[in-house]
Length: 361
Ligand SMILES: *Cc1c(COP(=O)(O)O)cnc(C)c1O
Image (tube, rainbow, N blue to C red; front, side, top):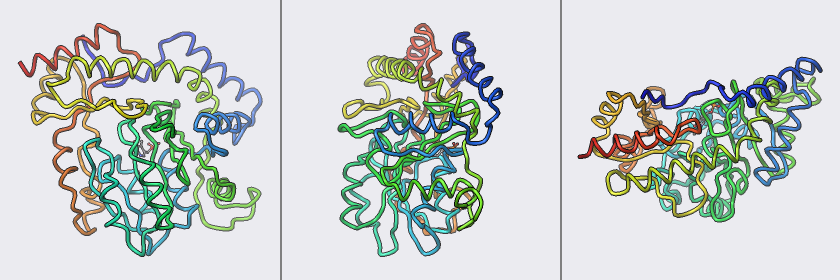
């Protein structure tokens, strides 16, 4: 058995035909830039996240950058975030000219809300939590804290489309929810894509302008910005992927629950006690992480460390004040993502779990 961490090829013939059909329709009508599929995609995303508006953008990075720009984040501002995420989270802050401030994580690998208060300063403009691994952070606490301080909340929900907690969906409760639909993500396109959700009409209008070179009516530029539009072809394919999404998440959760049952007590498994997790990754924690990773690779099971370098410790950010993040520093050496994707057969899932068990015996 040779088990890749992910397999992005499309071998389901029905799915493949639906995707090809969707692309063909775009080629036929020829409205390649912001075509009708983009609007339909935005409506579907807004409906799924139970918000009033969604804006399709070029990537998750675009989503984060444009979301912060729409709030006017710039030089002199501070944005509070977690140290444990893909570097795009911090890059978005830095690209706006603002300063990232890192608050340590808790046992769920998400930002620890109890530590946020002391990190808030007069310069803090936004709280930017990440719903890491597909499990929501304690968003309700973070939103109410932001209300008390009269600052904004932007969710990095790149890994968590469809996740919820206490009846709140990812991207629903904050000012702006940022999603990545890159092919690795739970709702994946077949190229780069992203979306931003909001209930605020003024922010929605700003985002529509900001993704189109900062123009009004696609002509007169009011503020410098990027080309952050989503491709119509990707929107069309995402409309197909959305149809398959509930089934896919059901399978990811089924595999995760199987791992939880078998690996419980052997490694630290993701807790599944509060909310609905979408398991973008199935991330275990163990002191023997590196040895386990090598062992699994020798048994032809590919795993991943997401992410091996904490964001403040990337070379680009070493000039910032050293953050106090002991939990993140400890857990980043212990975490390992084992394969969890909808193409895994039961026999493969059993093989992965039994191989992990065998390593510890
Ligand atoms: C993937 C990801 C991003 C960036 O999304 P892209 O579409 O790759 O630009 C941002 N934040 C997190 C947490 C991610 O996982």
